[in-house]
Structure formats: C-alpha cells, structure tokens
Image (cartoon, rainbow, N blue to C red):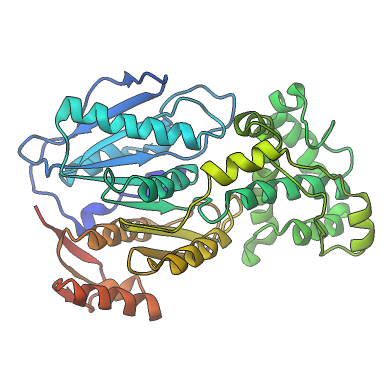
Length: 423
C-alpha cells in the first residue's frame, strides 16, 4: 500500500502548479475520535485555502498491529501527502480507523465522524473529496455511493469494490489449494490458524515456507498452484513476481483470517461446492483439497454491509493494475457491470486500467490523472489539455464527449497533462 500512498499527489505540482511562495502545510496536533481512531488535520495558509477538503482513506493494516495513522502511507523520503495537498490549496485530513485488520465499516464511520470534527474546527468546506486505496478504496466506493450529501466525488484505487465475498474466496481458495500442493508446510488447520502460527508468521514464512515453495525441485508443484489459485505474475519476471504474490496470498490468509471471521460474525469462506481446475489431476485435487462451509451470519454481513451497488449520484473514479496480486482486477469488471446496470457507467464512473503487475503499482502521473479526472467530473476545472497522453480509444472518446457536454475548455494535444482548478 505504500506505493499508491506516496505517488497519489506526488507530482500534482506538475499540472496543478501552486502559487509561488505558499506557506508550508500546518498540521494540528493529532486528535482521538470517540471510537478510538486517531486523526490528523492539515491546512494550507488561510489566504491559499480553496475551501475544499481531501480526506485520505488508508489501506489495510494487518490485524494485531497498533491502531495508529499509517505514516508509511503518508510519506516517502521527504515527500508527504499533507504538504502536497495543502500546496494546491486543499485542506487535508486522515485517520487511523478504530481497529486494524478488516476495518471497512469502522473506516466508514470514522471518516464520517472526521468530517464533523473538521467542520467544527475549521468550518464546513464547500466540497469534500474522498480518496482511498486498497481497503480504503472499498471504503471510498461505499461512502460515495451511500453519502452523496457529504462527498462531492471520490477516487477508489485498487480496492475490492466489485464483490467483497469473492475477494474473501480468492484468499480462501489460495490457502486451501496451497495445503493440497504443499501439505504440512504451514502447521495446523488451514481455516483456523493457531495464535502461535499467526504471531510467528513472518519468521516461519522466511525460514520454512519460502525455501520449500521456491525450491527448484518443487517448481512443478508451484506452477500448478499458481494456475489453480490464479495468482497474478509478471511474465517478464516470473519467479520474482511470484515471490510477491505468494507472500501476500499467504500473509492475508494466515495472519488476518481469524480477525475477518470475528469481524464478520462468523467464518466467511466457503468452498464446499467449488471445483478447482488447473492441476495435473483436477479429480484428485478436488477429492483431497480441504473444504469449509461459511457461516450464514458472515455471508449476510458481507451482503448487507460490504456490497457496492454501482448506483452513483456523485462521480467515482477507479484505478487498478491488471495484474494485482492482492485485489484482482476483475473487481473493476464487476463494478463496471453494476454501474452499467444503474446507468452511471462513464457518466459518473470512470475506470483507469493500468497494465502492470503488483498491488497499487501506479506511476505518479497515473495517480495524478485519477485525481484530475475526479475534479473534472466534479466540474471544478477551468481547462485541461494533454489528456491523450494518458488515455486511448473509447476512454479518450468518453472523456472528450463529457468535456464537450460540460463546455469545458479542452485541448487534446500535448505530451504532458495540464489542468487549472477553479478557485
């Protein structure tokens, strides 16, 4: 998650040049919300403030880690999001959520509360934009759908916005099939990891799991598991990228499974009737793979509170790498079908696919563009040019059609994206 958090506004100054001489960001002392979530508010100089607020919804933090604002998603080297956002005239706010692990509902509630805290301290802003990645991407999509009276627009990057239950199944299927191809490598019940395994996971993975899985003698087993579990990889760096996919798949399904079950009110994964394919003998694979039924309470919880609808009143821009090893790209396809059914596809929903491996692996230009498109859809740009440097084909045509309908001064040409924000 660090990758997107760093670059999302890292080159905003290329296209959205702040006024020379603006003061640095000024952050209030961190506060604590009633839920226990920690929050931070950072403001530009009063003379530069454009009366618009950007809230950052951070990504997933492993269960059991301390409740705190994830600094590694805010800063990289000497570049920090609050400074960059404030330099553009926007206020900036973020928080920790009240728990780690699965925290979608807690994150939603804490961000809504953060809006009220900001209003009480700084006044209610004219526009509020919600930008989130990974788990924060789902929080953003749900919040923009459900609270159009609060959020003017949002960017949901690399989030499980298409089908949350399928996301749980993605990790569950990976863990179940791993047990078939590498039996005994991870001790205990694959669906009920014991506390010792969870607590010592990092060391166990490095000392035991990784050497076995990537042993050249086990290469055929690894290749089969990759096909069965549908693990993304970079064809130009097969083993190197698989090390990332394997590490992340097993970390989520071991370290965070118990927390997910507790948070959802029951075991959420079900493969009782799943037929797995891609092995040398799918018959034996499906005969011996461990099976588990989901608790009805968990299924109801996911369907009721974690399911996006695609019914958008406000603009939502989504961005996703095609070979995301943590949250697969098919979430965007499912969400596009929802917005198509609701009549908001391209009119209020705009997806930016990135042909690259790894979760939230965007360049700064790409991440900037998602923010620009959100502002464009919200109608706060004075003019825009160089869009063809970022878009091709139907996406470019849809953008141009939208610009024409909004009577927005627009120039296709140019190698660099350039925009101006209405003050």
